[in-house]
Image (cartoon, rainbow, N blue to C red; front, side, top):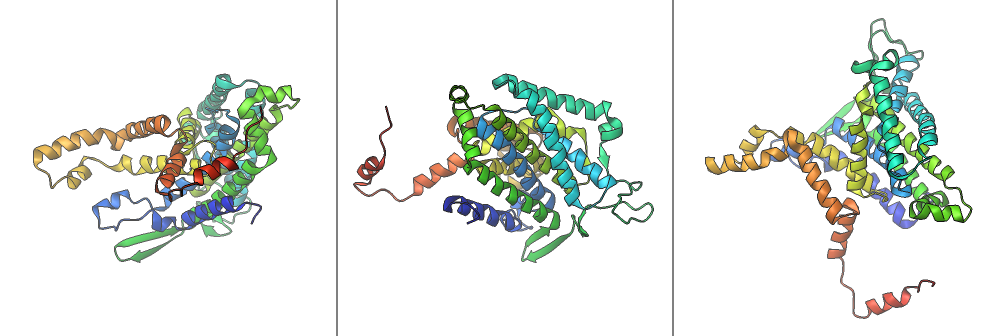
Length: 401
């Protein structure tokens, strides 16, 4: 169905279910519970889950399939954001034209950057992409201030009069989808639980599902097979008469357009953009997302993006006052001792926790969270019956000499 095999279609349906039911899944604890601190079902964070999931899916098409590690992918996120913002300021407050413009501008920029960077491979390619990203950041921060807004960035102002928007004089426009405000939400109370259904989140979620579906098609296509061949042995491809560069450039541009889509959606959800989106730390973040979830897998980058954004927004909010509430049942001396041990890993120190988790994944789970899930599945799967091993060996083909 939809051109997918049963396994891929089942995976798509799982992602669809998790995405649509996210307001329930991400709010497991009642509001009155002390554990409500760990709830993540509020609109801004849910939007970031799916938007950065798109960013990581696109990066995985380049890194996971071809093995080319870009350290400057945030440049396309930022360029796409600026393109979308100017479309909203000048043309229409409808998010669709803005998102399309973000994808187009990021794609054009990716062609230019990829054409130069892909002349080299390995660490030289990575350094070239990092250099382009930092140059883009510097240009946006200072040189191109009339276009980018410099340090303060761009946002919708009362002086903006988009061509296709009928705004009263002095009115500040809002991003919308054919009149529906991106901030519109419906709250449903069920006992002590409060679930929020946000229009902006579901619009971003639809784009994420489309992006995920296209990624599956790319992975299973002959084009995806060629990209895997590039990663496996690019030199052998050249010896057989195949030029790998058009394939790597196409993968680079597609990956950049995914980043532009994420940048456009960020503007659609929160109508402002600044140069910090192009800084090298943003590029490093998408690398961590992909590796943490599982590079080269379909759902891994989405899981990695969710995990990192969860820690960034949940663990970073836990302070000593909250810890004292949690451990108030302990004797004073023991309570202070435990808090002293725990506090460096939360709040402003959440990066330390992320670093330890990343180290553990790289050492013990090279395939990321996806590999961890596969190991758990095998652990609890039905044991083989006697004779299954012989049948498996008999079904395996002997490799050619």
